[in-house]
Length: 114
Length: 111
Image (tube, rainbow over all chains, first blue to last red; front, side):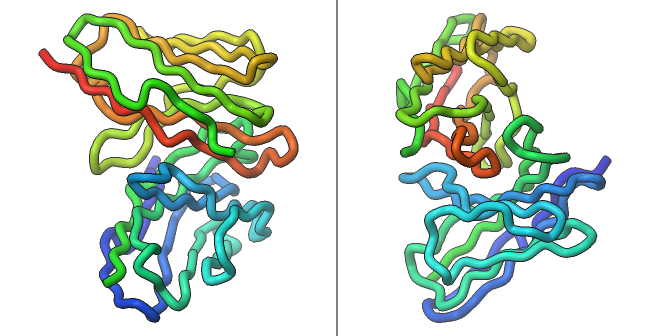
């Protein structure tokens, strides 16, 4: 079974631009969660989608948005990029609720904002 | 609001034991442990679903004291492959679709 894939793996953008990251979950998994990982803050929850519905959102500004498609693939978008958005963005998929199901993480997208 | 992990870093020789602690000020529905090697994705270790539960996998085990909202990860007879950053986390009782994680404990095992 293929694992979670994320594209692109690396991105370099400048302040003010916007970016779209993509995540393909493990086949059959309906829940996709997104996290921001930085050296000082660790893993910070962004949002979680299940069957195309956002069930939860973390404490991030409205510049961060996401969506999930009918095939469970998910995208996240960051508009008006700031220097502080530089981070590793990880997505994770699980069969059902991440509360009790194992989350499988993708390799991440390393975003650098200049 | 993030769980607090201690210690922040551990250095071990192969064969030594280590304990990583995780404490949450808010009630967690379950406790998840992950290990992340440098440049790689976090990898699932175990989930503890209820207080008092203990689990083990190979020489890595964990416990969850629901009353104290504390979990501990025990690594015995450490191997070089145990090196990495360990994260604990879990969903809050009030919101089980959102996982919060600690800032991690960096473990290095030397020969």
